Length: 140
Image (cartoon, rainbow, N blue to C red; front, side, top):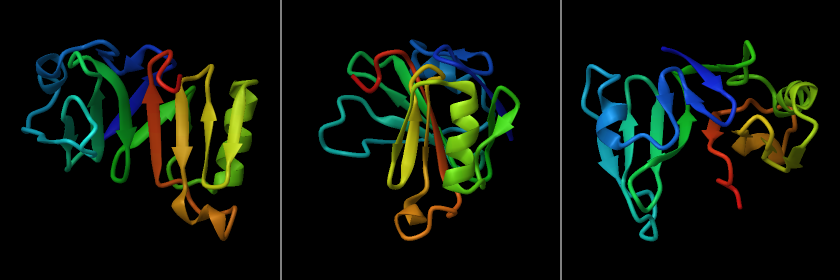
């Protein structure tokens, strides 16, 4: 399933700040809801067949969306999943002057997008396995 990330606003017609019921209306299936960590105040929604997680803040409002295969998220017509970390980071840097590179990922603060490539610590060309779209202030 293709998803278009609107920097710092949301994904497709789903805006950050939406309630879980509003997010779920966009899908034909029911999500698996669970807390990823015991510290999470609100459970996330995982739509497995689409490869997408929706994360909510303590008030139950959408604050981030994470994509993994088979999802096909794009930002500014750029699909980051599957690209090597170095290539994806360079592409993000072409769209955002405030990209913070990490050993296994990168965060583009002005775009509200981060990428994760768990195998990149050993090989910088390892593929990006997840893309996270986030609201302003998510990493603060």
